[in-house]
Amino acid sequence: MNKISRPALSRPVRRSKVRYRTLLSLYALFAPTAILLIVFSYMPMYGIIIAFKDYSIFKGIMASDWVGLEHFKYFLKDDKFWSIFRNTLVINFYDLLFGFTAPIIFALLANELYQKMFKRVMQTISYLPHFLSWIVVSGIFYSILSPQTGLFNHFLGWFGIEPIYFMTEPTLFRGLLVFAEIWKNVGWGAILYFAVIAGIDTSLYEAAWIDGASRWRQIIHITIPHMVPMIMLLFLLRLAGIFDVGFERVFLMQNPLVYDVSDVISTYVYRIGLEQSQFSLTTAIGLTQSLLGFLLLVISNRLSKKITGLGLY
Image 1 (cartoon, helix red, strand yellow):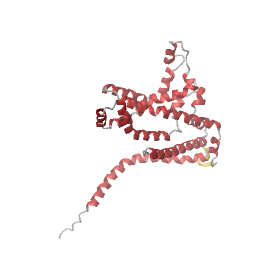
Image 2 (cartoon, helix red, strand yellow):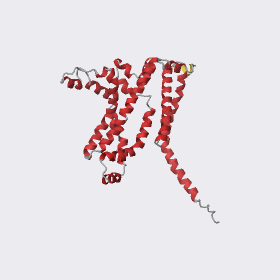
Image 3 (cartoon, one colour):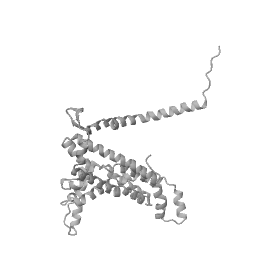
Image 4 (spheres, one colour):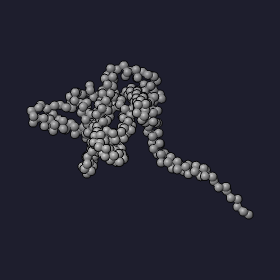
């Protein structure tokens, strides 16, 4: 008795099976990341309802009394909060103006170095501060800028200049915060720009050199235009966090004498949330901060797509 042969699978069916197997393996690789994202990023969003309740750790989230928008009204009417909000925006503006542009300038300058060994050494040295914790960085700055034993004030003493109390001077403290951020992360932030520059076709530079273009002209017309997409992407991501200043940097470097110019939302939330146990109020502030950042990201992304044709999505 002859065996009944199965009909041969059509080519589209075979292709769909191969594609399914390929996608299945990719989904399997993505699954751990998706699980971690859901567990640690989306499930904790359940705690947002604390902002609308008079939360008590003894009653729990669901049993705590519902107060609606009372906590939002409280901090929006608080003059101290608006002072802190202004400090957050000012420091972030300085970070955008100087801290964001510093890696771009550093990448352009490092790319112009002809000695490859020296170029690699400079890049490696610039990466090192990124791996130091802010505790170490703040200790370095306090040691160097100390009015009694600091190296910088000791150098000023050679010229008869009186010691300057850098870390307690309100007019200088914001500049020190921004400088510390640049010193710590300028090399690390330039890595993506180095990658973009390395991917530029060298024939473009050769053609420009044959046409008589100087190095400055090559930077303006070749290097920077190729960097624009990456610059816009990082700028939009940075702009989304303009209402948030790194907690560790400010908390470890500030002191009570400079609270008026250095107290930001993250340090304010730390004091009233953990030290005074006002969990509902701090949750309301954090929720407002996140919503403003998300709104700013959406608006800036649309403006960027209209003006430059580039955006996150």
